[in-house]
Length: 317
Image (cartoon, rainbow, N blue to C red; front, top):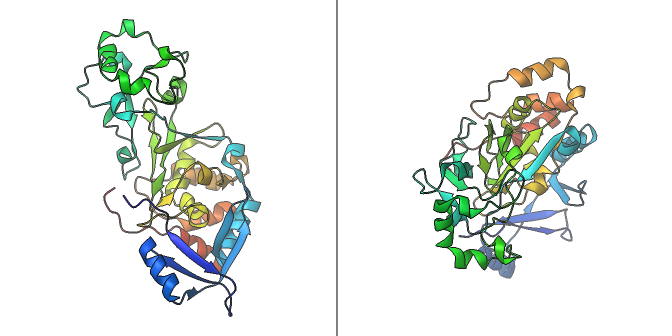
């Protein structure tokens, strides 16, 4: 699969400043190190992020990032809750196509990363067997003979999982399903992508653990969605996200936990209206909008924002 991280080699001991080289494979790294291939000289700014991670970026983008940090708060402090989707444990047992031979009231629409459309909409293609009650207890399988027959066929593998701490819990999923969370409108973010993949869900579907869901109590959800579709997450990922071979980046809980936005009450009313009314059916970099939100004025800084939000040509996921 080649899921290793992309590799960057830094050397601050060479004369003339910091140098770096990027290599696409472990084989090429070995070759370059053995043959002392020349690195590429650059000007980098390195600092510690709010959570202790390294912020490594060009001088202009690093300065913009610091300005954003100084003028905003973490998503959680702005009333935005970020959670990873449901971990199942033996996913093939719990995921069904439309013609599942299971009681209909035990099925929930199930959203995977492939179900996030380019237009920002969510179209679930599969269903999840819900083995939990609204109160957070496992359902009594005696009341659902079809579901019980299906799970019993996989009992040996299910009961051998580490999440099964008591014999009677053999058919549980790793995480409990929170039906109130499922029902709530939410923004879904793919956990790995070359550029941010974001969709708005009206609620009623359970996200997979390859997705992160965001709900909001203060920011209007469509305004936050417009901001994300305009490239904000790409700015933070450019500075903070780990890279993987092929150019993919992590948009995971670590990165999303460091995203900062202003309090909605502090956003200029004209900008509030623009965000609420903005047509984001097509993802489009809007660095000017992001710059205005954070009060970034300098030409060089606005150019750095524009470069961080650039999107490659659309390709199939």
